[in-house]
Image (cartoon, rainbow, N blue to C red; front, side, top):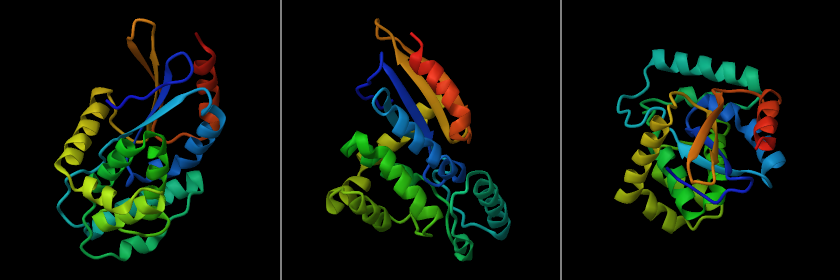
Length: 220
């Protein structure tokens, strides 16, 4: 699993999410607030969860109806914007592996900006109706986030990036994650042992998370 230097008594937040998960897009404002309030006290790492990796069949009408309902529920719960022109696409294959791979590559290049890349992918997919299954679009988004486009594009199509993305999917499963977003609390003790707690499995507004976060951050 990806690791990074932590800040407060070995405490790190682990966000397991997928760029093409609508509830993860709904969770973005909560994560922004968490980062604003706790960035100086907590480490943060992002794991790409893999919502529908390797999908090969195009969306049919029934799938469009189902996904659209999810989007409507997320919009109602979170207020996040959605461009429903997405459902006018014909032959679109809802494969989330490429965008997950983009998160993994972004993290490998600069761990501190992985969440920003995830947010940018969410926005591109849901609010801007950009095709984030397209490697060229993914490279464009990376460039907009300050990555060198050619280097990112090369890394994105590498076997190493594909393998690392599978590792992320496996890491998520090994942590018992079955849905997204999932936010975990990880604490490393003096012996180097890692201990995990669940802050949320699924969407939860910041106001509901803050008491749990504060209790964990201030505990010994």
